[in-house]
Image 1 (cartoon, rainbow, N blue to C red):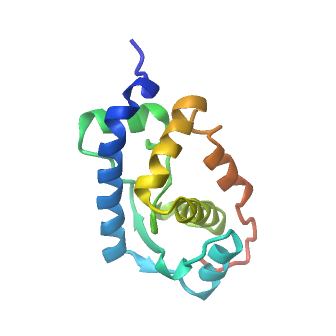
Image 2 (tube, helix red, strand yellow):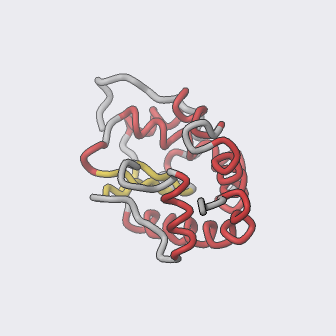
Length: 157
C-alpha cells in the first residue's frame, strides 16, 4: 500500500515543525553568513533580512530521525538522494558539490517565503499541504522559487 501523505499530514506537521526549527537553530550557530554579493542576490529575490541567513555546506542533507517523518520526506521527494538544498527559515543546507548562484537564489526565495509567512511554524504546514496536493515539483512554492532563480554565472559564491 502506498504512503498517503495527505492523510498523514495532521500527525506529521507538528513533528516536521519541531525538526525544522531544531535544524534551523543548528545552521544559525554553525552556518556562515552571506558575503556582500550574496546579500545582493538574496535581496534581488525579495528577502527582507538577508543578514539573518546562514548557510551550512554539507556532504548530504540531514534526514529526520523519526521514522514516519523520514519516510514522508523521502516518499514526497522533499528530501532524498537527489536533493541538494534545504531551507528552514533563515537556515540553508547546501550540498558542497552543488553550490552555485542559481541554487542559492532558489533557496533564498524560500527564505522570502518563510519571511512572508512569518515563521517556520506558519510556513511549513502550507508548504507540506502543497506537496501532498500536487507533488513536490508542482508545489506553488517550488514553482515560485524556480521562477526566481538567478542564472548569472559571474556572481561570486
